[in-house]
Length: 351
Image 1 (cartoon, rainbow, N blue to C red):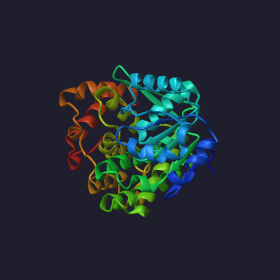
Image 2: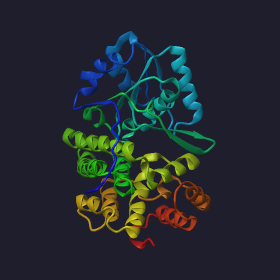
Image 3: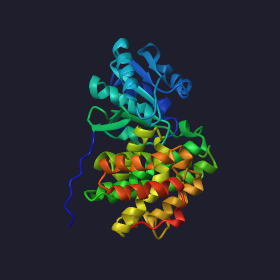
């Protein structure tokens, strides 16, 4: 019998169409009386509408969120919390929004109610990060994990296909990583494999029919499982590489995951052929790497770092940064980034 340790994390999840309108007030009621709303300028109209039933309990809005949570943005959000004398934060938006709330929570010790509108899964994890001087540093704290998460598929129907695809591949990367980490427990592996199934099915339909609530629900359910798996076992190689490239070169987090995921999976399978067998089976592929690449192409996710604006002249430096942060030789990191930069999948065999 396989011995393992599995740690559950506190928190509540409310899932279903309309949940953001139906349950938001009651979830906030349990946590605070002075709420700072954190969102983006793009999502601010939606966030304001959802928060309207809270009335005067919303004592401020912070909408200066930026991807990768630059230190100066986190400091500005902390100042906003202090000036508003907030005792609770309401995060409405994607991973960068909840990431900003987390950066505040780890210092201010304030609870977060999160309403995700993408598939990052960050709302389920105690991991937080800041970008300082072109380097993204991360940490884990129980104070970073939202106390309540409201998953409402209706809020994701307006996501453009490109964001749907890239954000979904981000969640898939968490599931895949949870499957190949050597200390993954069987419960987390079950969650991760089910997350792959839900995401693969949901994303394909959601990109084709954006208003399909069943498809959006499957994708959001998969993102929830992805975040839960990530919280249990921590970030794998894939995640660390994306943090390095995002912090140093400003590459968008979700699209970078979409590009790198098949290549990292191929490296894993070259070293441990059965490590991702369950993922491959769910995707209907001989190799998980091939199934992931085929899915990325089918849903229109980016497939090369060049598409994301990665400077070709920086590949050598990027390989050195990656090798310093993840357990990989610099030569392996350079080869990985070179083929991912070009995106020529069929021309590459790792090892």
